[in-house]
Each structure stands twice: as C-alpha cells, then as structure tokens.
Amino acid sequence: MSEAIHPSRLKLIEAALGLVREKGYAATTVDDICARSGVSKGSFFHHFKSKEELVIGTVDFWNRFTGEIFVSAPYRSMTDPRARLLAYVDFRLDILDRDVSEFTCLLGTLVQETYQTHPAIRGACDDGMSGHIAFLVEDVAAAKALYAPDADWTPESVGYFIQSVLQGAFIFAKAKNGADQARDSLRHLKAYLEYILPQP
Image 1 (cartoon, rainbow, N blue to C red):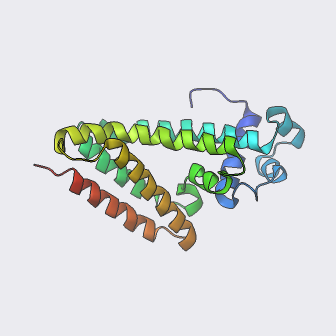
Image 2: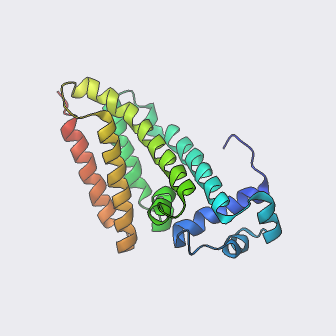
Image 3: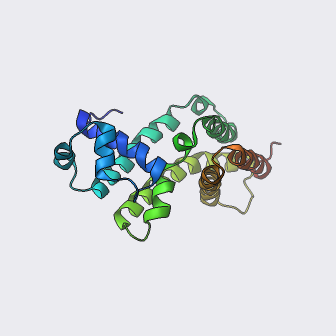
C-alpha cells in the first residue's frame, strides 16, 4: 500500500477484515475487534466513530489492497487479452488453496448481510465490486475485438457474469466449508470464456 496508515488504525482494519470474513458484520463487535487487534477501545474511537465507519474504511483498504494484487499479478504481463483473461481465472483457482475465510470476498460477505440495513456499506461494496468488474471488462473488450468481434454479448455483461460466478462459488465454499465446488465452478467459467472467445 502506497499510502501510510497509522499503526493502530491499520491493526483495527486488519482485525475487522479477518473477523468480518469469519463471522459476518453483525456478529463482529467492537470488543472483538479491539481484542484481536490489541488496540484499546479508547484508541478505536479515536480513529473511528463507529463499527460501521471502521468497516467502510476496511472496504476501502480491501479495494486498494486487492486492486494492487491483481494489477501486479504475473499474468498481467501477457500481451494477449484472451490469455490474460483465462490466466485471471487460473490465478483465482490458485487462491482457492487457502482457508475458506482467506479466499472468500469481504465485499460479497458484507453486502449479503447489510444491503438493506447499512446503505453506506452496501454502496462501498458496490463501488468495490463494480470497480473490479471494470478492470476485467478492459481485457474482455480487448479479447472480444480480437476473437469475437461480431458476438452479440457485451464486455460489461461478461464482466458481471465472471463476478457472479466468483461470488456464487464463494457462497458454496462457505456452505460446504471447502473449495471443491468453487474449483468446479471456476473451471466451468474458464471453459465458457474459451467458448465465447474462440481461437481461429
């Protein structure tokens, strides 16, 4: 991360990130966050007015952190956009080797729970997911121009489809407490992308 964050603030964000992915928003308390971070409650309220404000800050941190991961991933050096898109799915598959709480998406977890009760969190999650879709759409559009210029689908629709498969895969990983079904879903996603972007 290029922007410096106060050490106590960063500890609180990292604690919230882990706890919300493990337990959800409602089940995570300020006391939980302080206990895991080793930061006092007084320091918590020095940095954040509420748990909601902390979580919105955590979403922003997550968006910047994961954005840097994908921008700097090795597959980004590939010159062919179709190859980059397929390697993106492979990159996502490799991440599934971690614990479920480590590879599932903070934004997807939050928005399912808070979309009606916390509109500010919902909006922050939407911005983050839509931003990642826009990142994917650049490669989808470039690949479409080269491999399927006459196809009647839009790059945006494929970007949302990719994100929908990912979020659905994460839900089933949580339901099954394992990544087998998620791996199958991402393999089907890769096969679908190969189908709609046929090589000559």
